Amino acid sequence: MRRLFFAVLFAPLVAIASGDELQLDRANIDSRDAISIQRGARVFVNYCLNCHAASAMRYNRLTDLGLTEQQIKENLMFTADKVGDPMTISAGRKDQRQWFGVEPPDLSVVARSRGTDWLYTFLRTFYRDEKRPSGWNNLAFPNVGMPHALWQLQGSQVLKTESEEHDGHKVEHKKLVPERPGSLSALEYDKLTRDLVNFLSYMGEPEKTKRLQIGIVVLLFLLLLLVPAWLLKREYWKDVH
Image (cartoon, rainbow, N blue to C red; front, top):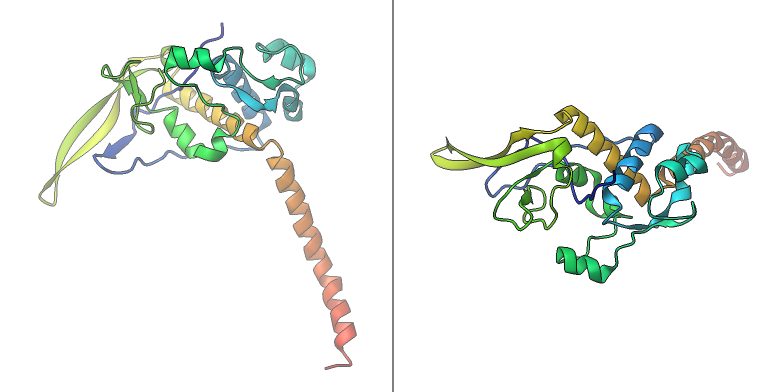
């Protein structure tokens, strides 16, 4: 069953001092891990694509990850008829503004604009906040308008504030504390979130891995060319010197 997705996951150990900038967790994604990106694509189409479009990404680009068109049609295509269609949503912009108060952004290049570490931290730092209309808030994105649609998988956590003396001054530390467990463990959620961020990163630049590979080949070629170029230069200039 497809679920609405605005944001995810769990970070009970995240803590920040009051007034200090949030320290981002390292996503440690691997753009060469096609299996991880496949899992991330599955999470994306099941939990994100109902509200967030990715109009710059087409389903058939997933064949670059080793998937067949038949696998894509059977397991990942819920909002399109043709494998060459972009990842769009059926909800109109006007309807979304009416339902949510704001139009959920297109996620095609969100990893490039926000950064993978920010996304990884954001998706794991939702907490209960009864003052918010949705009942949820986020450390990385204070007063976020999104509810936490995956709380049943992650569970819920609350924000606690602790005070301590430091050089004669009182310093407040905020940290997330588990309130209710979800159906997955924290490590399983971390893995799921990392896979999702890996896919978002891939989606923002599908040719990145190939481009890096081509770059390595070009650099190796230039290094090999350096030897005959130096020998040729020495031959031309031997009479001058």
